[in-house]
Length: 150
Image 1 (cartoon, rainbow, N blue to C red):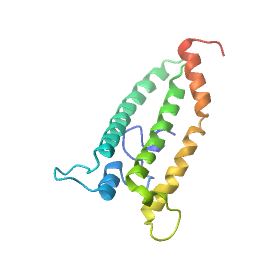
Image 2: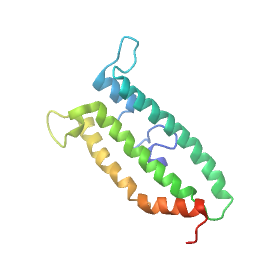
Image 3: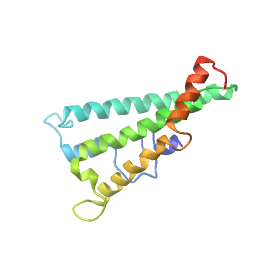
Image 4: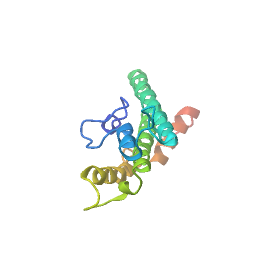
């Protein structure tokens, strides 16, 4: 599930039809005279998300090694929880950059990419439900970390 969200490597999975965050930002907010995104707040959000996605990819590699050692662990729940949150945030940042263009459902004046992003944003909300709800994953994490009985 997590790798399918395009988060394990910090990039997009092949099945997504949408551009990356930086490309969306450039398209809708433009660039400044230093060839950076014109909106410094959006630039910071994208940079933070990119760093977190890269760190998450490395964490997933480490988690995979830990899971091989066996025993009850909060590892899978932590991955599911953080992965779903990162994916939802990715689409929130896209909509932030796109403004009203990110809220179309059909027809003019929205492009096919804008419509796809809107639908994928709505679909990303289900990430906190599939694979166990966010609340269940957080409960598993707390039980395992605190060594509480099941």
